[in-house]
View 1 (cartoon, helix red, strand yellow):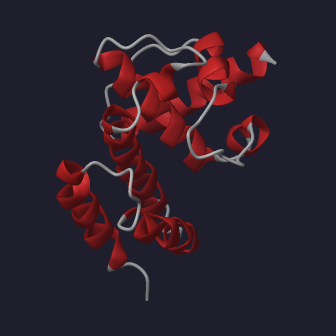
View 2 (tube, one colour):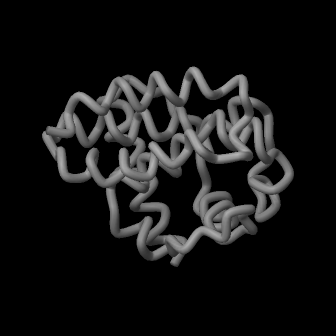
Length: 147
């Protein structure tokens, strides 16, 4: 399992370099722990779903990298320990890189799918108020590709 995760991380880091993102080192164990840890929303996306999807890999590697840049250790408890503010901050950053990658590949179907989720964030009671303008800006930036 860790060998496969390692390969997927390496492939994703190469994609992120092309997007101009400076990625922190993410170990397969950190990735596994982060992906299998507890979440406040009861995510239904599985580790396998993520490993099979380039866009979700970009998203998760950016999230982990952004947490590491803040000096936060990556464990099964990371998401719960830094929820909601930091968790939402890194999620928004990761979403922007994920959607930029989809845009570069002209994958408008993926952008449309993810933007449907993003609009729900505006009604999320847990989204810290100070992140609302950033969330709206992200939605506006990619909404124009939804014709």
